[in-house]
Image 1 (cartoon, one colour):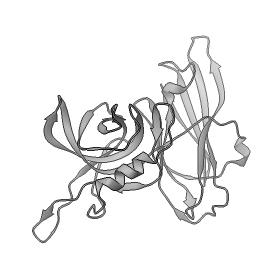
Image 2 (tube, rainbow, N blue to C red; image 1 turned 45 degrees about the vertical axis):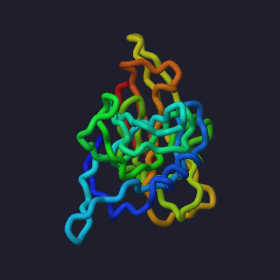
Image 3 (cartoon, rainbow, N blue to C red; image 1 turned 60 degrees about the vertical axis):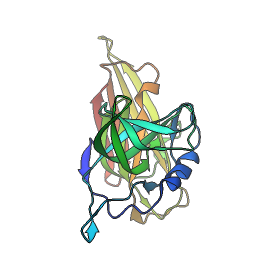
Length: 239
């Protein structure tokens, strides 16, 4: 899912303080943090005549940076663009980075040398952690897209759920090195949903931090396998 333009589904009627509470509740994971699950609308849309004006947003995976005071002041998209946040978010972990999917609109202004962006939506991106659980017990999921972005392998998934627990991770199934020195990494998705019957489709964003994989070097080959509702499917990339 490269960056794309989208419109929010309705006026953003939740206050920034709700988003701050949402971010503050996230568990700590070294310096790179996941958010608690959910989507928050951050900024009220401007009114145009008698109706609401919905800006055309850019939606993209990003790293949200908090400064030493625990204030979210900027974010970096997977495309390498740095933005200052027009209304900084308080209540975060100091000097931490959060993995998010954000909907934003550049304002055209500058702050401390960075272009300023107004955040409208902020959503959790699950950070996939290593697992050694057997693939035979995987639960299937729908897959909208799998792609490389920044230092991550990103996934947009559509599992069937009734709102219960969904467990996500990844396995390193094998690593092989060719005579040329190129390594071939074979990963697969770990997915469990105990006591969560298949029902309606939900959207889950997830990221595998490739920079945390031991030994992975530029030029190495990656494959990623997911058990989908149509069977196992594999995506391949160069790192």
